Amino acid sequence: MDLTTLERLPLWIGGKAVAALTKRYGDVTNPATGEVIRHVPLASAADVDAAVAAAAAALPSWRAYPPLRRARVMMHFRELMLAHRKELAKIITQEHGKTLADAEGEVTRGIEVVEFVTAIPHLLKGEFSENVGTDVDSYSLRQPVGVCAGITPFNFPCMVPMWMYPVALACGNTFVLKPSERDPTLALRMAELLAEAGLPAGVFNVVHGDKEAVDALLAHPQVKAISFVGSTPIAKYIYETGTANGKRVQALGGAKNHAVVLPDADLDFTTEAIVGAGYGSAGERCMAISAVVAVGEVGDALVERLAARARRVEVGPGDAPSVEMGPVITRAARDRIVGYVDGGVSEGARLVVDGRQPGIPGDGFFVGPTLFDHVTPQMAIYRDEIFGPVLCVVRSASLADAIALINASPYANGTAIFTRSGHAARRFQQDVEVGMVGVNVPIPVPMAFFSFGGWRASLFGDLNVHGMDGVRFYTRGKTLTTRWPDDGSAAPGFHMPMLG
Figure (cartoon, helix red, strand yellow):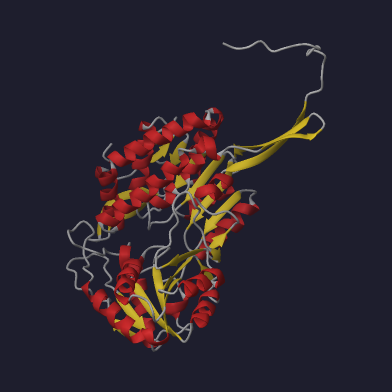
């Protein structure tokens, strides 16, 4: 169906679109215009229970599928995503606001996870040891955990859920997705494509909603594993509540990603990289660079270049040609970001580029690129995850001081260094206490065959998303020890007949 024409969105339960039982609905807006474009059901506990029941009913037959057969469903799903990539990007841009190029890139990164899990017959291989004792063999299996759930944020409505459910499904689990209620339509379109790819009814389900739906998933006795990406306070809540209810939980939290720039860095290259990483997708990325650490005498020249490039960033609706940065997700987000800029000025930081009034006509939720210099670690614009197009430059006397600054942050998702020195890069990558590190790479997001996740308050749990950590999270290990005593059937001189 054409979901973008619906006034009220459905849920997806048991392989089909169904009307929600809830009477509560929220508005879905186009951030570029401020217009309400459709309404999303805020699922009740009864809606969640129906989705979990469908997933539980589908589990026995789906987990019995040979891994190769599950892989073939994923292969078909990949082909459908490729065929519909531009359509999916348009849905993302309409509800999120990011540029079409960003949205299409997001879809591509999701496809990469699907490509990874098409190798699931190999990824689920166990180990075998012969004769661990006399006539005793030992081997291991990896088996699905059961009904799994994903709770995902607004900033990547395609990619982040696909860090989860392709891996979970390929491992033989069934899945209930609770996407962000701010940009929910893409999840329903993905459910349609999975059904077209041959996924049996009930294996993948979608419930929209807010805290009521989240709490219902966290408490539901048939949900065995929960995956979450979002802010650190909510990640902590998800982890503590889910584990208290006996569930396996991976909860990825917030970020305050630093880029360290040494005096020997190529400043033209570095400037383009940092501007793209800081202002791309309006800064609404968990891997966005938000703090730039200028080491030694590089600060003035770097700030001058960053300011000049920030002023040239073209801001506007994400579907307009040549636009580099779209709006932020909601009016409340815009007001919160502007409030942080006001606070930075009050605290004494130097406002080099002011994006509070970008001059875009209409009622869209726009904030322009904003750049602060001489920011200190005590300021709120440095401490807090702003999640908007605000770059803060901090001055540092040495690389050692820069590393100490990063290691003192409660967040430890991603970081980067820009330098021509192999020695400095090696020291940085060894001493910095952060989960993902880039060397002359501003957004060090790993490929799907590695796993994504940070340290400290950026991750609750001990397994990251996708990659082999994802396979381990969505499976349980089982070790078997076997002995088959001689029952006399293999008589002396017995020979197996040759085949063929």
